[in-house]
Length: 274
Image: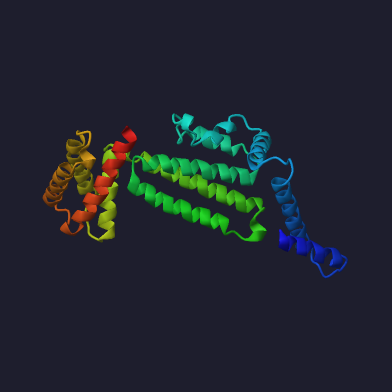
């Protein structure tokens, strides 16, 4: 506030000079406007932040003018847990929005929620997609200043988010094409990622077969309500998994990594089933 006050005093003296560029003048007026808003928020009977946010939300809702789009704003709300986040209808609703920045924000919100839901059934792949999403958001935030309001640039980001959303949806449904269940697919991804990490060959057929057996072993231990906090059952699970990996010729160097990942995924299933 003090610096902007000094800025205004200096500008009042020298504003008649032609040394200022239009961009510099706009920056000065921008800071002066922000100072005025801060004063209104902190002095007198001005509306508080909550009131202003409420007003802005109403303005955005009015600006959208798209039937059904209001449902998008409910994503993540506690009373909206039954929403199918992968329903194609959501993308169709967002596609009606003409405001590019608003569209990107809603797509961002949609994909974030989709990732949150996917993490409940496949933690390993959710991490991979989260990295892609983070890189995409960083790319958007680091765009050049002159590109901020260029519709082609914003449209490109919208399409990239939509492409990642479709990629995530395809991955979520891929277990059906493999002839396994979604829990078995999660264990398959764990086994496959560790094989890639340690650079050893293990065919897809063998991975699928092993993933099915892993699920059987986990289900056998998870039938107990408190299985994940009982050291004796966790020890039995680890021994059974070690024997299973040895039986299927899965390289011994990875035993600890496999157990850790499988145990965390099994806990994940338990957490979101209840």
